Image 1: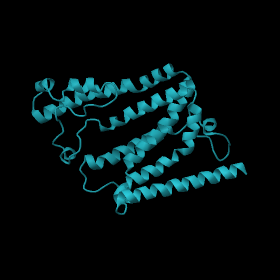
Image 2: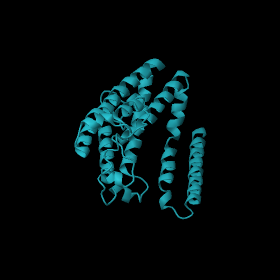
Image 3: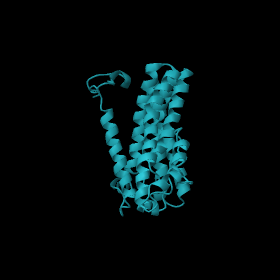
Image 4: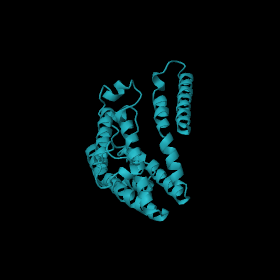
Length: 256
């Protein structure tokens, strides 16, 4: 666990214990939130999840959990680079962290789950390997480098309630986040290599809270008063003004 912050003073990096913390539990709870959130549209449940109602349609638990994943990943990725101080070593460790499990998940879908679904829908196994459009082999090759170019195999699962609702049918829809995570790896590695990492990390950590306000405005456009775009722009102006006043006040207090 984190050492008692109320009893000890220091930076987060100084107080954080890499071997005794609750990050694994936090990620597990975030994963549960994603699964629970996705179960509503996937199961074609007639009502929305509780957080959608509580936030009046501004956000759902899945989106909030994904944001949490990116925050935790930022902490761990930064620590990973600081422990190596070498771009090539950092890239190799990140590749070993992501690629083997990613490739295994692709193979599991193409060679196990999709064939079983094909047999269930078409009552034959042999024709699965001769699919010409969205074939299993193309699924493996086109997705091998993280960026997902083919979500489905042979139009499977098209009879599910989720597919009938007009949504994109995907065997593993959560893989969309990986390409963004890899891009973050590249950014961290490049900034670290250029010696600018600490400067940007400190600036970002002080201004990252603004993303919460930006996301809240973008997610809440549908519930804003007409004309919605104009109302959203005014809201962003108010948000930027209040942030500027707050930052100026903090700076003034620091100088005094």
